[in-house]
Length: 228
Image 1 (cartoon, rainbow, N blue to C red):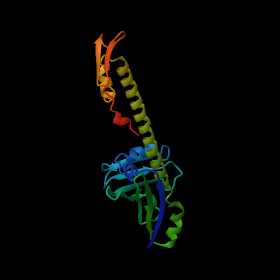
Image 2 (tube, rainbow, N blue to C red):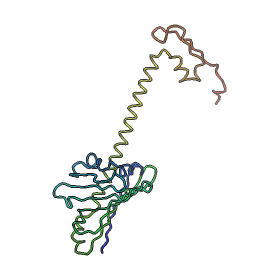
Image 3 (cartoon, one colour):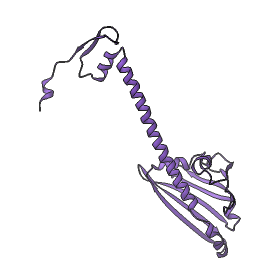
Image 4 (cartoon, rainbow, N blue to C red):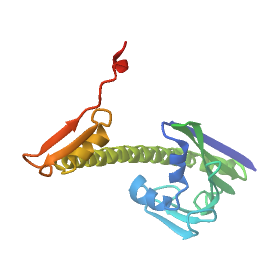
């Protein structure tokens, strides 16, 4: 029996938990097909399970791809270690002579805002002849592509979130400014915003609109505050 192992490491400027959230998502199959790798797969279908341990996926690639179709099973989804192991259970490299094939993804925190996506392929073949037959087709390329698109997806989503938060904040600020400028509670706003500047702000006449008279009382100056 011949055992082989291939590894790939990708360092990314994203917190480990955010990357792992995509890898461990029960909707990963849908994300892979529709958002992350459109056009790469002909079909990704859940045959069993809910996206967690025990889930079986049918993976089918476009014509000309080797292997074109196989089924894989999630045997490990460890949220604490951020570790996912997926074993091929039917078709694919097994039909080509491999007796075992497994993909492993391990998301390793490097710091608060960075991590390493460690991808690994393990496979076994009965002899050198089969090894020479399957070796040209087995690599970490698919895992590398997945790591890159997931990283870009997380980064882009973070950027969109920041832009959305800025837009919401700007809209809220503009709304508050309009409320402040046209409010009949102008005196209340001034006292809340500048409590040390005004002792009292009182509307003497009208309700905050054109022609409103305001009586403003300023606290006595504490000379100690101006000593240098």
